[in-house]
Image 1 (cartoon, one colour):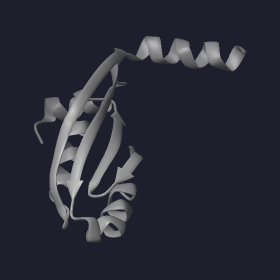
Image 2: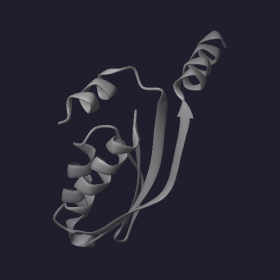
Image 3: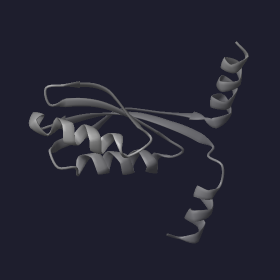
Length: 104
């Protein structure tokens, strides 16, 4: 890794990213895929039905999203993993939201 890239990653993130991924998989491999996805970290499975799964990924940069999507795509039994939504917001907004929620 380039030293400057490492320094950028070590800094506090300026943004928080969330993305949803539609996964098409072989239905008979569903339990294996579900377990492998859950083991990744920074992911959550929201829905699963007959060879399809909706997964969200959160992280401090687009690289985390891309890494998780690639890892899912390469899992045995997965036919495709496609991003269908991506949102980024400033960390300041996310922090303010958490503080506001805690005050309620």
